[in-house]
Image (cartoon, rainbow, N blue to C red):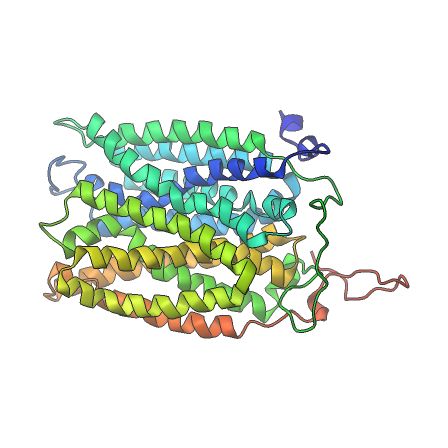
Length: 462
């Protein structure tokens, strides 16, 4: 089995079609993208004992919000911890491990729901499943960039759009399964989680065994790497993960990713109950599930659109667009809610989600530009700790500010307004962090030999 999963076994033979790799990446990311549909389970999980309504002993939404939060936090931490391992072992082995963790997380979580032990749900979906999320998320990155050096943004956008699009499938599928399994004594969540765990394990495993890596020195036919230009963010040198942590560029990009994710993930974590509360009487649970699915569609489309556009206008300009337009839209949302326009409200969040997803899809190419391509999976894994922080911060902002507002007498349909203004403020800060990103100085780059054989830069740090 070890030999079957080894990186050496999956080196592509001459003539291999590189366009066979993106579908493998999509198989992984469409499955783990279910995380964005988790809000579909929030209200049913809050009625596990009462079935038709919440009763004493049922879990509260604030307690359930931690399931998603833990999963996203562990995603970032596991990506950082296993980033170098993923890069060294190759996408087949790491993709298969991710499949096992993600599928097992659902099954363990289902046991926790069945026995009404919330800590077991936290451990199953949050910790075990979160490891599957983190390892699965970074698995295709360096592989795609190595196959598509001529289209870095587009290639990572193709894979990572799957993570955004996973909820488009998972949201209606979960709603359908819960209705199928529901009874007078069950909400159907337990059975739904078991089915999803098995399906995701199979699909992700198929994707993992389809990966190939290019042979050493391979480049696309007719493509020549453009020379590095003075003052350009794009470098032809590499920065090791250890040295990357010591640069201000890494931490500026950490803020950029963290605040962009915080602004979107809090909304996604409560998208279904939020639209039902803001438009009470107009939106039922099935329509809310459709809203979650629609957000997923735009999240997915934005990942491909913005990442591809970044190949033309540059990564910094792309993020400047995110933060300028995003700030305006978050500030507008409370007013739209007061107007009572469901269509305009949905439209605002659909555009916001394109940029939220676009930020995820563009950041690997941004990192490859700034720190080089050699260690991009490991550096990307480290940067995803920003996602971990945002996964805690974003849902907490939405959940606890909402609860504070309600406890203070604010109507439920207005309880999200303050949070929207806070999100807009975070994007302003991220805008200036993005503007401050400059090329990495030579002292941080990995040593290389010049034409005379002398060492051109300082020794690399592991």
